[in-house]
View 1 (cartoon, helix red, strand yellow):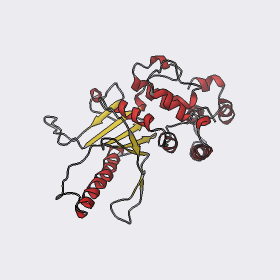
View 2: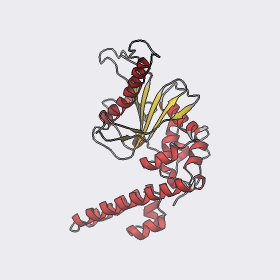
View 3: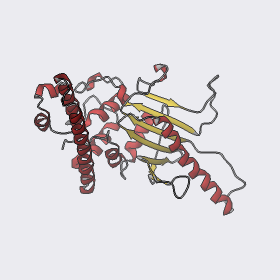
View 4: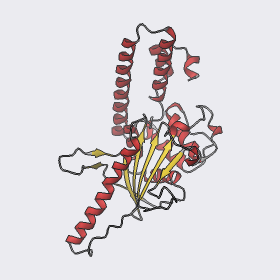
Length: 298
């Protein structure tokens, strides 16, 4: 195990971020994603939500919380590209909408409210994604990493409602290489750098001075976790390693007759994935046959 958890894994992200006591950490992450947002207090909500019918499966969100003013936030981590991921986030927004309407109906039945008011409190669906969204124009990006959307007119840009907001931190767009934290020019870049490389780091870079980073690194350190959290993270990493090993075996079976260059590329790809999981470089050398210099260059 490395010193810090690999929070690019969505299950590990839940363990680190969605833990009582880490509300201030998540609040600061949200403020960085949404320009002008200020959050005094956050409250964690249940992450399991039933579908539209009793027979529907339960949807598990990575983190769900509400602010003191009633704004609701769904925060997700997605490491690998997924087809129609944006549409999935739109579907996620339907859950808090239904929750708000169900509460309004309950208040009407109990005589606590007058006839149905469809006004919605703002709902923010936010994602950290370790890949790039294919934008028509990259000018949409805030600080080169964050894209955001609301429902608005395609002709004038007039916003129809402020009830829905979608934001994506595209970690896959970060161009700062590992070992060069001083090249990060903004807090957003520093956050992206920390999330991508934390499990390969031994401490928080001295250049990262925002109050977010002591909270993030402290919450992500194995030594600061409860025994239960450590067991959960260990189980998550074992499952991830098993999946990588299975995929690697299937790939090797299919390329036995491939060229030597192809096999070397596979070794580097496997080494890169193991590095992201925080596996010690000596173990990676034994597993892949790559030299220490080759691994350090990844």
